[in-house]
Image (tube, rainbow, N blue to C red; front, side, top):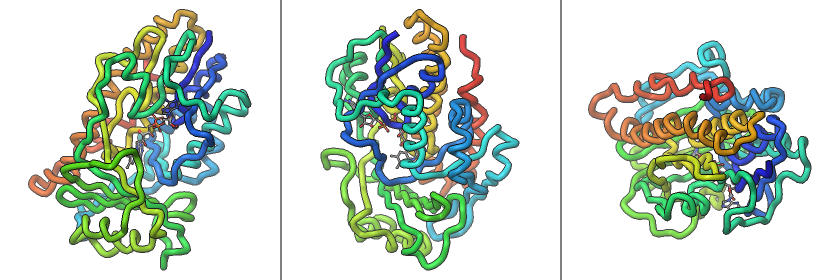
Length: 367
Ligand SMILES: Cc1cc2nc3c(=O)[nH]c(=O)nc-3n(C[C@H](O)[C@H](O)[C@H](O)COP(=O)(O)OP(=O)(O)OC[C@H]3O[C@@H](n4cnc5c(N)ncnc54)[C@H](O)[C@@H]3O)c2cc1C
């Protein structure tokens, strides 16, 4: 069976590794000339970690020492709203809750794929037409060209949210930053910080709402002054972290999504990750869903010679789950940034209450 994966992001590489472990020999076509994720952090929640462990990545993940003990949510001025213990994540959900550099996760995946097959990942290959193969896996992100080809040209839609990010080297900070994440949130605005790579860097994310996004392309250098102006009244502790960021390394971008699809597959084609279900980052589940997709797709193809049967099984297993998380991620924006101001309780309807982490892509029933 000739299988081509389009896109070597977290979803495409997870799928490639899962397929290799299922005895397949996929090739991955990646538009970029070099592998190397943009500098930012990513949270990898227990549901996704279970998938990565099933692919034999336990020792590599262990070496990152990335498990977090807790998460805190504070009001914009710094007063505490909620604290979530994550130290019991292994007992409660079967895996730790991790926070790491995207580059480290990407590196672990690409090393494992290449160890199985050094020629698997082909760089500098921008796919414009559907490749000739028994199965094409579209892992080409929110702007997926293959999705448009199969399901019509619904252009990605600007959500009204913009994001900033920066990575601060620890030596630029006066004191070490404690492990785990802190979220400061107020009406229409959220700041997040968490240390990564054993505290060598602090990952910063800012999210705010705006009416328009006119810039072309994805990521743009952003100005510290604009960020500070967009977060009036936020705690000095949060803003001082941004002031410590290298001025030329603060990036900003608009957040785009697409509507839920009626199917994640078409004849000979499976969509995974953001190509299938791009979502807002308010539950930290976009990469997690891409990992779940890849692991489940690998299982659907293990020992299966009928591509159509494998695709049908994949769609049945994944569509409700990913669409649910996609919708809840959008609702999470309001819970975090608006409604808790009024009700004081909405924050409790988070990932734990929704039982998102109990899912295990390596064992979930496939029918
Ligand atoms: C501010 C922010 C914070 C986030 N934080 C988290 C988090 O903490 N946890 C989490 O789980 N998720 C998070 N996410 C979501 C997560 O980043 C994405 O959902 C995830 O990266 C999607 O992975 P993917 O592999 O589907 O797509 P992508 O990462 O977009 O990869 C697509 C790949 O396809 C390649 N490609 C595109 N077009 C072509 C083509 N025509 N031919 C060949 N190659 C092509 C691209 O170069 C790229 O390498 C966050 C998102 C944002 C915006």
